[in-house]
Structure formats: structure tokens, C-alpha cells
Image (tube, rainbow, N blue to C red; front, side, top):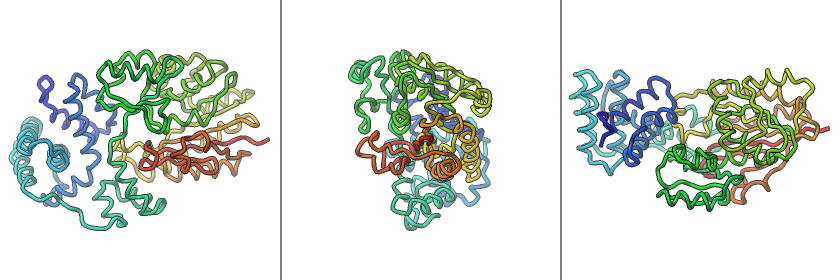
Length: 447
């Protein structure tokens, strides 16, 4: 089970080191390390790597009960043990002897000699021990943190905000893989045509429940970016909650619209296409590499009225004193804690201070762009987070400081999730909406 001279478990080990020890992002590392793998090997590689990241707290708890000085072990040794321990506990279709032997081979290749027999002994003992059960009750924060593998500070916040009844399903949902969903570019094609092409390629799919006429859920493992469907702009990967943003914005042909934080450009293109490529879409992105990606996606998806601005939106609006916008989208930089299903390393990387820092950035952006909204114009604010400081607190503040009023948009959402929307604000929770954690607010500037 190998690709060239590097086994799948070696790739898992090296990918985990890149993510846990060097600060890499899982979606980028996984894409890089899985090049050239067969679909079967790629599935195992992704499942194992993301599984370790999801269950890191539970894994470390189990290993620390077995190894007295576990916390003092070198980081790369812990990475190797975590990889093997996860497979023994969570992947019962792989024979334990195979897990132990291949993990020891990784240890022999990458760890000091004294840890070769050590790794073997630890994992062989883990095979013989009963499955380690965390004892406690769901409402107890330390128990929930270990049993459901989330940082205790995060568990405490969500317990206080959502209550125990919502907390446990939310934690459970975060530990499940997110569905891979495709937005269909119906300006170029139809859902049925895309479905037919995918089937001919041997890729299983089905209409996604919340947007069955506009999105497909992939049931087979495939790198959609390597297909002509993607390169020709007929499809793009997008979470369903994100797909609602442009629906809520309701762009109209002929308008002038500002996309304040535009990369990677999917929503930017969707705005232009909803306008039938009539009018102007000004798209700001400060980072050069992300600005390049923005331009590539806009071109790929067929958006012809986008004017890219490689600058901070705060700086940009200060240079266009006489220009006002019919609609403004602020899909703001955020903690991304709503995307834990896709990027589980964020659980162990983010802090409360990060949430507050992003909240300050969001306020700065809104303070800059709100005065540029026309009277009667619409502002949509969205983040892939459900932290209070990045969502409800932000909207409460700007509606107090500026002549903005909430606009109800329940009718724009599917019946199944309309309960998540109230007073012009919608909070999407993974266990309730089959989406990433997400927040959308719709506001109108009063006269």
C-alpha cells in the first residue's frame, strides 16, 4: 500500500508533522501530499490524517494513561504514536498487526533508535487493552472536552451559549466529515447534465437536500479540480451555507456592488452571474496570492463585470469619496471555527484571543464600508463562525451606530432551515443545517 518509495502511513506521519508542528493547513497539506495516489490510497490517507486531527484530545488522553511521561516525549514521537493509536481505536477494518508493524516501520525511518522498540511496545499493549472509555456526564466540560475531543475553553463557551442540549450534537457533528458539495453554474449548464457527466466518469452523486436544484453532493472520492467540469467553470466546490449568501444579497442587473473581502472569488462570480453580467462588481482582496486566485475563479466561472482591486477594502473606499454602492457584501475574515469539520486543526490552533482579534478586524471593515452604502441599499454580513463576538455582537453594534435596519430573509431559505433565521440574522449550526457553522445578516440603510 504505497506510492513510489513512500508508504501511505509515512505520508500520514509527514502530513501530520507539517500540520501540527509547522502550522500547515490541512486542506493545503492534504492536497499536496496526496498527489499521485490512487483513489483508494488517497481515501485512507485523508481519513487517517483528518481522523488524528479530529480526535487529538481523545488520543492524547488515552496515550497519557498508558505512558506516564507522555507529555514529555518529543513531538515527532507523539505524532507517530497518535497515528498508530488512532488506527487501532477508530479504524477497525485495518488488522491491528498491520497497524503496529507499519507504524513501527515509520518509527524506524524517522525517529531515533531508542523509540523504535518503544513504539512497538506501546502499540502492542494498546491492542491488548480494552477500549479506553472516558467516564463522566455530557454536561461536564472536562468530560465533554476529552470524550468529544474539543478544547475545554471552546466547550465552555458553547455550553454557556447553546446549552447542553445543543452542545453535545454540535460537538458530535464537528467530528464527522463534511459532505463534499458542488455548486452548479447554471449560467453554463444544468444540474442534470453535470450529474450525467459525473456518472459517465464513474463518480456517484446526488442532489443535495437543501438545494436540490442547484447543488450536488459527491458520494465518490474525487479531486474535482482535476476535471474538465471544474476547469471549464461548470462546477465549483462550495458549502451550502456559503451558497445562501448571494441569494440573501439579491443582486440585480445594472447595480454597482462592492465585495469587500472577495477571495477566493466564488461569491464574487456568483454575484456577477446573478446580475446577468450587467453592472459593476468591485472585488477587494489585499493578499496577492489570494487576489490571483480571485481573478482565476472569476474568469473560470464566466463573470465578466468584476473589477479586481488588490488592496485592503478600508484603503480602497477612502479613495472613492464620490462613489456609493447599491449593495455591499462583507464576507469577513474570521476565526473559521464553523469549518472545523473540514479543518479540524483549527480546534487546537485557535484561542479566545483570536476570536476577539477577528472581531476587531470585522468592526474596522464595517466602519469603513457602511458609509459607502446608498440610502435604501443592502448590506450582507457573513462569517463562517458562530462565535458571539463575530456574529450577533457585531450586528448589534453597527445597527446602533449607523442608520441600518434588519431585513427578514426567511423566505429565501429552504423550509427545513427557516427556523435558524430571525430578525434578519441566520445562524447555521452543522448538526441542524447540514452545513458549516455560518452566520448571515441582512441590513438596509434607512433614509
